[in-house]
Image 1 (cartoon, protein in one colour):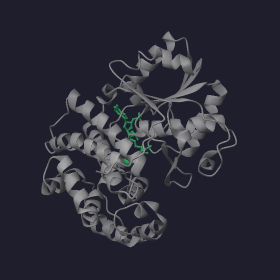
Image 2 (cartoon, rainbow, N blue to C red; image 1 turned 90 degrees about the vertical axis):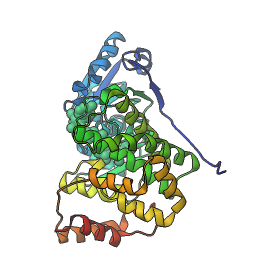
Image 3 (cartoon, protein in one colour; image 1 turned 60 degrees about the vertical axis):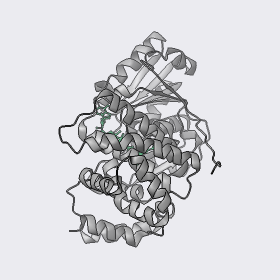
Image 4 (cartoon, rainbow, N blue to C red; image 1 turned 180 degrees about the vertical axis):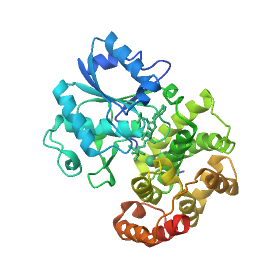
Length: 370
Ligand code: NAP
Ligand code: FE
């Protein structure tokens, strides 16, 4: 039996009924002034903002809301959030949202404590002062950003790039799946596909270990039976299914922390940047090709993945085919641009076979070529 693994989770993850409203003591332990970082409206819509402000008021903590975070957050907006935190004199930050506000909140904590870091400087400048303490509250069931030390931001040139390290972990994660109940069906599918991609890519990455593989399998065994039901266009998940999807996204996040992503994520960023395809879907469209490569490189691992999904290999590919639909077409010049850009993409090197930028470009041509 393979028993070698390492697992580090600097964030304390707390769950349970009304965990946010009951976390007054945690909030008080971090200070007297708090900046809340959110997207435009979902934090309010899903009830998380009301629960947070209820607990902050009870704890007599002053707060200010920074709600300018967009999808695929810009370094510039996060830097602005850091400035807002400094000007408000925030002792700590609470991030509420899907992956975008959560990743942004991590960056806000860094910018707030490090005035010398401006915009894209977050990728190059040294962090001199410890970031502000951070609490994260997820409202989508996909990215697992709550439990990762990764922040995916958009550079000033419009390209997505991640920044990571111990400084990017939250101090506390308050995990309550009820905040995902308001997520529309299309976003539920796309975010679940993101968690699915995290589980699969990290399973076959060059950096996996035996524990991360267990987390991948656990995530898949929860996600696929529920995703399968979405083949029926009228399907709406019940609360139990929503809860299972949410916790599965955290398990996939644990796996991702160890294994990292492979070429579907690296290539998927381009579809989001240039064609606005939602992140989870943009990565998942490349998963069938990735699984075929994985089957060649690691047939036993492939068999374990299929078994964890609880359906046959054929059904798995059919399911992905039916859920991963986009109507984009990509001109040949654009594909050539990707081919050149992807020659330096690290995600190819983390993938299980020697699939490279040329193969990636051919795949894009086959899937979306004009
Ligand atoms: P998102 O970009 O955070 O949000 C997508 C949309 O869903 C927004 O319009 C948002 O509204 C809305 N929304 C969020 N929660 C909702 C709820 N409970 N009810 C109704 N609407 C809701 O989506 P995401 O897929 O979770 O995050 C994607 C981002 O995470 C990408 O930038 C991706 O690169 C990144 N990511 C990070 C990691 C990591 O490890 N850090 C891993 C994978 C992906 P508002 O704008 O109003 O909030
Ligand atoms: Fe992702």
